[in-house]
Image (cartoon, rainbow, N blue to C red):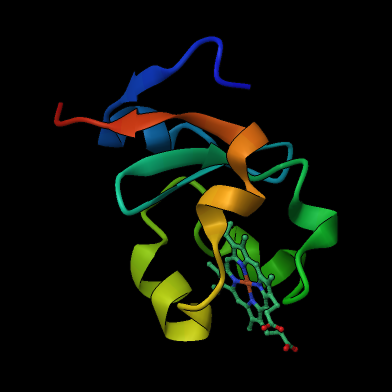
Length: 83
Ligand code: HEM
């Protein structure tokens, strides 16, 4: 939910790179992808490639037309900031 929005640094993001705790950033917005993994039409494995890191480029390369803000609103963790 949007109750506690975090400021996420690159090193914080890197700590959340497992299947059970998978964060990724897309255009500066950080999402917890764990709950969405089983529902991704492209499969869990593809999505886990961006766990713990920025997924903007791979997302744009695969499906720039998908509205991630709308789809993952409930999974928003926060916004990227510098260290
Ligand atoms: C397909 C959502 C991240 C790879 C899809 C589709 C959706 C979706 C809705 C179906 C699109 C369509 O049929 O028009 C998302 C969301 C993401 C995400 C919400 C972010 C959290 C990624 C990433 C990758 C990826 C990072 C690559 C590393 C794919 C591939 C397909 C796909 C390859 C095509 C599957 C197929 O048609 O067989 N995704 N995706 N996705 N996604 Fe993602």
